[in-house]
Image 1 (cartoon, helix red, strand yellow):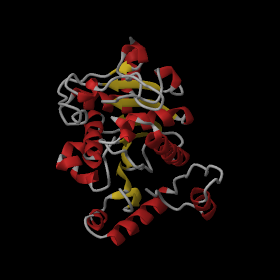
Image 2 (tube, one colour):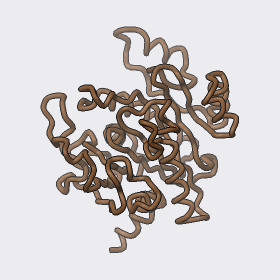
Image 3 (cartoon, rainbow, N blue to C red):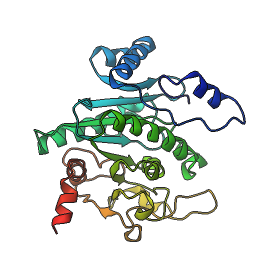
Image 4 (cartoon, rainbow, N blue to C red):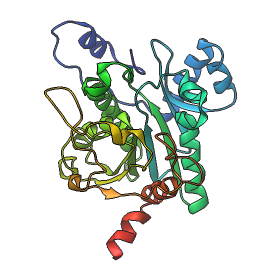
Length: 296
C-alpha cells in the first residue's frame, strides 16, 4: 500500500529505489492543507468517499489505492488540548472504515472514534478534545502468517510516528493518547519509544505490544484491557524467532495498568457505548485516570 500525503520528491525516490537509504519519517502537513488535499482526493475517488466529503467530514489523510488509508478527525484539532489516536488491527481496510469488518458497525474505526468522542464530551462537556481514527498502515491479513509477525506493525509504527509528530508540532501543548486495538496495539507499542511526547498508551484486546514489559515503551503510562470472552486469550503468548508476539500487555508481569472490561462482548466490544472500558479510556484521555491513581 502507498500512503500518504504530500511527500516530497526526494522521499518518494528513497521509497522507490532498491537499496536506497531509509527514507525520513513522513510528516503531516498543516491541518488546513491536509483537510483540503484529503477532501479533493475523496471527491475524485467517487462514492462512497465523495459522499463523506460532501457531508463535511474532515480527513487528514486519504488514499484509496490498494487496501486504502484514511485518518478522520472528530472534534477540532486546531483547539484541542487532549487528542486520542485510535489504531485498528488486522484485516481493517478502507472499505471497512465506516461499515466495519464484515458489516459489523462496532468494528468500524469511524464508529469507534465517534463513540469515544461522545463519551469524552459526556464526561467533560467543556473539554477541548479531538479523536482521530487512524487507518494509516497496511494491516495484515488475519488468516496469514503476517498476523503473527511484526513486519506490518513496524511499517505502521513508522507511519504513526510521523503522523503523531505532525500533530504535536501543530498542537505542542496537547496531551496525546494512543489507543491500539488488537494488532493495532503492536503498532502503538513499536512507535512509542520514538514518541516521548505521548503520555498514555492504551492496549485493547492486544496479543502484544512489541515489548516484554511496559517499562520498555518509552516512559508513557501503559493501560490494558482484555475481556474474559475475548478470543485473544486463546492465542499463545509466546515468541519463537519472528513468529508470535510474546507477553500480552494484560499479563500482570507486563506492568500495564489494568482497565475494567464489564459490559465488553468478545474481541470488538471495548469501545461500545455502555462498556466500562469505553468509560475508562475516556478518563485516560482526559487525564483523570492518572490523577485518580496518583491520589491513591
